[in-house]
Amino acid sequence: MSDFDAIVIGAGNAGLTAAATLQRAGARTLLVERHNIPGGCGTSFRRGRFEFEVALHQLSGVGVEGQPVSLREGLFQQLDIADKLEFVQEHDLYRAVIPGQLDLTLPADWERAITTIEEAFPGNGSRARAFFDLVKAVAFWQIAAKRGMPAEEIDPTLFTYGLRPLRQVLDEYFEDEALKCALGIYWTYLGQPPSKLPFQDLALTLFAYFEFKPWHVRGGSQAMSTAILDSFLRAGGEVRFNTAVDAILTEAGRAIGVRLEDGQEVTAPDIVSNASLPVTYAMLGDIVPAAVRNDLASRRIGVSGFVLHMGLDATPAELGFTASTSFINLDADDDRTQASWHSLEPARGVCVSSYDVAPIGFAPSGATHISLMTLQYADAWDNIAPQDYASTKFAYAETLLDVVEHITPGIRDAIEEVDVATPLTMMRYLGHPGGAIYGYDQDATESWLFRNSERRTHVPGLHLAGSWAGIGGFQPTLEAGARVARRLLRTKAA
Image (cartoon, rainbow, N blue to C red):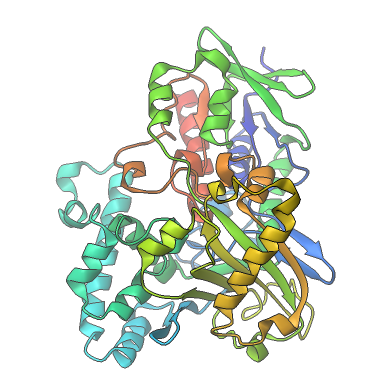
């Protein structure tokens, strides 16, 4: 007899929702986490009188109360945590800035966004409406296709536009380059520039934020991670922190358990891994099927991030932060910006999260807590000697401040607390190759149309959940864990 019905490796977003979904359905589940707290990227930490949000910039999919097909009314209700979380709504999607060329704040509402675009770019309101109609159509039919609707029943709009580069679609609908930049700025959430990003990815992102609004959680993503863990524990689940998995045990080619770092072996007929695919398959040793080896060899490790966390002794208004989320790019050359992520060339674009425009409770009165983030690959740090690491990361952090000073002159004077994370930091805490935050590079070849690691591992009893098996980001990974668990449960019940 097995020790458990299921073992979940990793307490990141997908690991937590997978474990809670399994346990609440009656499957005896063990959750194993190498860190001392749950959450993975969904955590926070303290410096002085500030608490810092690690990674959540905007939570999509929450929806307003009563809105169907939302995290609030769906997953969070199913896990019995909806009324245990306090959500903080952002009323703007973002502020998009290119110094001297663009400064547009886009409301988180389809109609108000069209009005704002018409006011800022006269004559483009009707173009924006047509573009948003396309966004809605591609998002809707993409969701329908993912849920199993036969291809012959899907509107051809998805196949006409879905895999086209975002840049081509923007060029078809608009002439003004600044407006194109403003409407495509979420590309930095997805890790691919408009010349490479499949339009369907941007469409789904815009739809999620417009239709269900951008949100934060009071108490940060750590509060959400803790609430999901509590749901798991209330249902009788067992969790072991500070515990790494050394190997996934197999018998006749099937996963049957895990060996922990202390040598203990724990058995279960189903193993759900929230670890990266390279790490997960390395745990299998020599039995990895050739099909998996060939698949992994064809994929590229994705981008990581460089983050400057700051506690500032001034209010958002005093600093000039008018939106919770701001994207500041030095110019509209997105391809050059993406190329710079492989180097320590000064930052060319920064995402600013100001967590006190709509306060989440991490900063004292009269102060504010912000993060500055630029994407960057870990190979940018390959040739930095250990003795030069600290000075190099702080020198690079200064270049992010240089970008942000275009909208907040003198921000350096307000700094009270600061902490800097590089791709090597991400690698250490997440255990991901390259510190990758989205899993593999999210280009067209990683589309759900071409790959679906979440559905098949070629190893019976082993299930994959998280950004490395699908789409990165908070909402996608939260949903992925629960989806994998439900699929596992259906298989057992059949």
